[in-house]
Length: 119
Image (cartoon, rainbow, N blue to C red; front, side, top):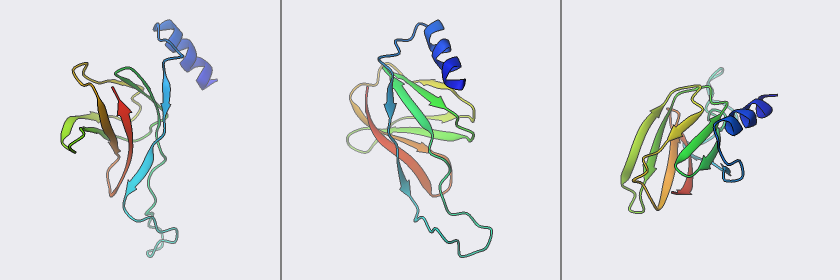
Protein backbone atom coordinates (compact mmCIF):
# COMPACT_ATOMS: atom_id res chain seq x y z
CA UNK A 1 0.00 0.00 0.00
CA UNK A 2 2.84 2.40 0.86
CA UNK A 3 4.51 1.76 -2.50
CA UNK A 4 1.25 2.44 -4.32
CA UNK A 5 0.85 5.73 -2.44
CA UNK A 6 4.47 6.67 -3.17
CA UNK A 7 4.05 5.93 -6.90
CA UNK A 8 0.76 7.87 -6.98
CA UNK A 9 2.48 10.78 -5.26
CA UNK A 10 5.35 10.70 -7.77
CA UNK A 11 2.94 10.65 -10.72
CA UNK A 12 0.99 13.54 -9.24
CA UNK A 13 4.24 15.49 -8.83
CA UNK A 14 5.09 14.87 -12.49
CA UNK A 15 8.14 12.69 -11.83
CA UNK A 16 9.40 10.35 -14.50
CA UNK A 17 9.29 7.01 -12.71
CA UNK A 18 11.70 5.45 -15.19
CA UNK A 19 14.39 8.06 -14.40
CA UNK A 20 14.36 7.28 -10.65
CA UNK A 21 17.16 4.85 -9.89
CA UNK A 22 17.61 2.92 -6.65
CA UNK A 23 20.93 3.54 -4.91
CA UNK A 24 22.82 0.70 -3.22
CA UNK A 25 24.47 1.82 -0.01
CA UNK A 26 27.43 0.21 1.76
CA UNK A 27 28.06 0.34 5.52
CA UNK A 28 31.34 1.87 6.57
CA UNK A 29 32.92 2.82 9.83
CA UNK A 30 33.13 0.92 13.08
CA UNK A 31 33.70 -2.75 13.64
CA UNK A 32 30.50 -4.81 13.80
CA UNK A 33 30.63 -7.21 16.76
CA UNK A 34 27.72 -9.67 16.55
CA UNK A 35 28.09 -10.49 20.25
CA UNK A 36 28.18 -7.28 22.36
CA UNK A 37 30.77 -7.25 25.15
CA UNK A 38 28.38 -5.40 27.45
CA UNK A 39 24.93 -6.99 27.84
CA UNK A 40 22.26 -4.73 26.37
CA UNK A 41 24.71 -2.74 24.23
CA UNK A 42 24.19 -2.65 20.49
CA UNK A 43 27.17 -2.11 18.22
CA UNK A 44 25.25 -2.77 15.00
CA UNK A 45 24.50 0.10 12.60
CA UNK A 46 20.91 1.32 12.21
CA UNK A 47 18.82 -0.07 9.37
CA UNK A 48 20.15 0.96 5.97
CA UNK A 49 18.06 3.76 4.41
CA UNK A 50 16.20 3.10 1.17
CA UNK A 51 17.46 5.70 -1.29
CA UNK A 52 16.69 6.52 -4.93
CA UNK A 53 17.97 9.30 -7.17
CA UNK A 54 16.48 11.28 -10.05
CA UNK A 55 18.76 14.01 -11.36
CA UNK A 56 19.59 16.18 -8.34
CA UNK A 57 16.78 14.84 -6.15
CA UNK A 58 17.35 12.10 -3.58
CA UNK A 59 14.25 10.18 -2.44
CA UNK A 60 14.24 8.53 0.98
CA UNK A 61 11.82 5.81 2.06
CA UNK A 62 11.27 4.82 5.71
CA UNK A 63 14.15 6.63 7.41
CA UNK A 64 13.23 6.84 11.08
CA UNK A 65 16.33 8.67 12.32
CA UNK A 66 18.19 11.91 11.64
CA UNK A 67 21.06 11.88 9.14
CA UNK A 68 23.79 14.18 7.96
CA UNK A 69 24.23 13.99 4.18
CA UNK A 70 27.73 14.70 2.87
CA UNK A 71 28.99 14.80 -0.72
CA UNK A 72 32.75 14.42 -1.22
CA UNK A 73 34.35 15.39 -4.53
CA UNK A 74 36.99 13.35 -6.35
CA UNK A 75 39.72 14.83 -4.12
CA UNK A 76 37.87 13.78 -0.96
CA UNK A 77 36.94 17.40 -0.21
CA UNK A 78 33.51 18.18 1.20
CA UNK A 79 31.44 19.65 -1.65
CA UNK A 80 28.06 19.78 0.12
CA UNK A 81 26.58 18.96 3.54
CA UNK A 82 23.03 19.13 4.85
CA UNK A 83 21.00 17.83 7.78
CA UNK A 84 18.22 15.34 6.91
CA UNK A 85 15.61 15.03 9.69
CA UNK A 86 13.86 11.73 10.40
CA UNK A 87 10.86 11.21 8.12
CA UNK A 88 12.26 13.26 5.22
CA UNK A 89 11.15 11.87 1.87
CA UNK A 90 13.20 13.99 -0.57
CA UNK A 91 16.28 16.20 -0.64
CA UNK A 92 17.06 18.42 -3.61
CA UNK A 93 20.78 18.90 -4.13
CA UNK A 94 22.12 22.15 -5.62
CA UNK A 95 22.00 22.14 -9.43
CA UNK A 96 25.52 23.61 -9.46
CA UNK A 97 26.90 20.21 -8.44
CA UNK A 98 27.94 18.05 -11.37
CA UNK A 99 30.19 15.06 -11.76
CA UNK A 100 30.91 12.06 -9.58
CA UNK A 101 30.66 12.29 -5.77
CA UNK A 102 30.89 9.97 -2.81
CA UNK A 103 27.57 10.33 -1.00
CA UNK A 104 27.77 9.63 2.73
CA UNK A 105 24.81 9.35 5.10
CA UNK A 106 25.89 9.75 8.72
CA UNK A 107 23.32 8.62 11.30
CA UNK A 108 25.65 9.37 14.21
CA UNK A 109 27.97 7.05 16.05
CA UNK A 110 30.83 5.29 14.32
CA UNK A 111 28.86 3.93 11.34
CA UNK A 112 27.92 5.56 8.06
CA UNK A 113 26.42 4.56 4.71
CA UNK A 114 28.08 5.48 1.44
CA UNK A 115 27.95 5.10 -2.33
CA UNK A 116 29.13 6.85 -5.49
CA UNK A 117 26.60 9.04 -7.33
CA UNK A 118 26.84 10.96 -10.58
CA UNK A 119 25.04 14.28 -10.79
